[in-house]
Image (cartoon, rainbow, N blue to C red; front, top):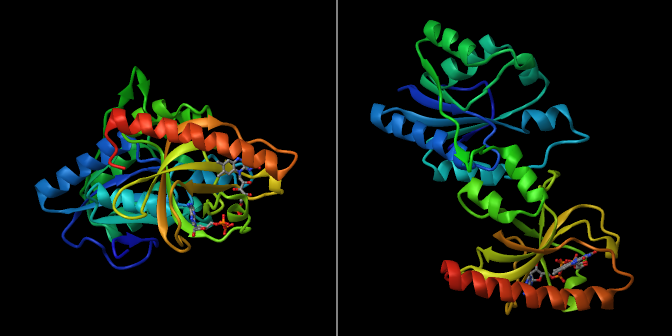
Length: 318
Ligand SMILES: Cc1cc2nc3c(=O)[nH]c(=O)nc-3n(C[C@H](O)[C@H](O)[C@H](O)COP(=O)(O)O)c2cc1C
Ligand SMILES: Nc1ncnc2c1ncn2[C@@H]1O[C@H](COP(=O)(O)OP(=O)(O)O)[C@@H](O)[C@H]1O
């Protein structure tokens, strides 16, 4: 985690100079990948540090806490994804009242100049920043003239004529269109997290489930899915997962629960990733537990079939 920084104040992270990209980076979709990949290449070419700059919580979550947009990537997955894409440092700056009040000029001076010694700054199409979204690319370019950096916008990445965007991916996942989301993301949608204890009811039903909390974020999809579970040994394991509030057992908090086929072991505290392959159905409220279990049996049959087919067609090494 030494690549992570969260505060505006602090020593300069790149005294030798940096190439910076700024964005929400929720989902790390193909548009984000193009932006981040470009920054990595520029930084390597110039011998400077590659830095991704974002916020946690995301500004839209901060401004509408009661009705936040669904979150595609939880903070740790977003951080790890940016590191995997070659960033030398990742800023997930705390978005709070002070940050919301910061003018574009102060943001540039404090963060881009003092903290990052930026030489180049790259942003996505339509980028806005600072108090009341007052700053845009032209603002950034004008401030760059003063402070000695160049600001540039990358081109739009499109899929079938549609702009690839986090909001499009959210809509695709909400509609259960996993394939469209996977095209925009450049990989299948997945949620990673640490396995926590639940009501311990699953094993009594014959379906122990590894539970992942969504850290108070809104999930972009819901229902019952065929999944590959990563992080249990060297190969992905086949499973069936439910993402929802579990109305049958009076659940309230939305939870991701994955039952791993042909597996018996302790997963509490371990980090797993659940890759969504096919949506089987929406969550339902059952009158009693035996009815739920009968449906889980049927879900499992369908999931096994979908995953067998997936393995044959895409060569997943499970
Ligand atoms: C394949 C599968 C399908 C499920 N479908 C539903 C459902 O339709 N409605 C519901 O209320 N809960 C559903 N659940 C969640 C179960 O209620 C939950 O796994 C069970 O209560 C065990 O909870 P525990 O892990 O806290 O012990 C499903 C779970 C799985 C694994
Ligand atoms: N096949 C399996 N799939 C998922 N978890 C399993 C499996 N076998 C054992 N486990 C373990 O059992 C736990 C889930 O059991 P469960 O009765 O549902 O308890 P909880 O309510 O705490 O999730 C998992 O967190 C994991 O440690």
